[in-house]
Length: 122
Image 1 (cartoon, rainbow, N blue to C red):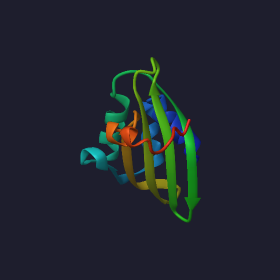
Image 2: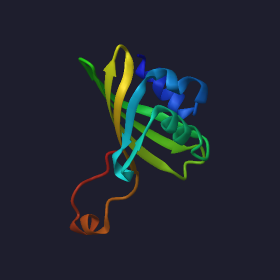
Image 3: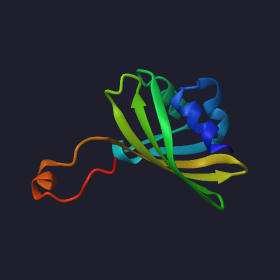
Image 4: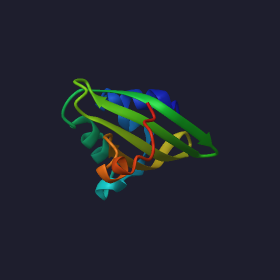
């Protein structure tokens, strides 16, 4: 599977192509919101999410039947920015399991800023 094409179809909310990356009985989990989806539910959740999006791949690690993927997603108006880390298990070049962790981008919490520790990544 071409992970870059998969990512593009996620970002462009390509309803016609997304299910083709998955085994029919694949399981998708969004741990931060305690949700588990079938392929059909995942496609619906992704494609019906309001707004238009852009994104960039920050990191891909592939080994054996596993892919770890990190991406940044932004709304076209740049009001929303978040990151996703995906752990993807493959079988016969299709996704059989995908565990995703989504988080909103933002400033460090006040308590850490008050300590004066850390610095901006970019």
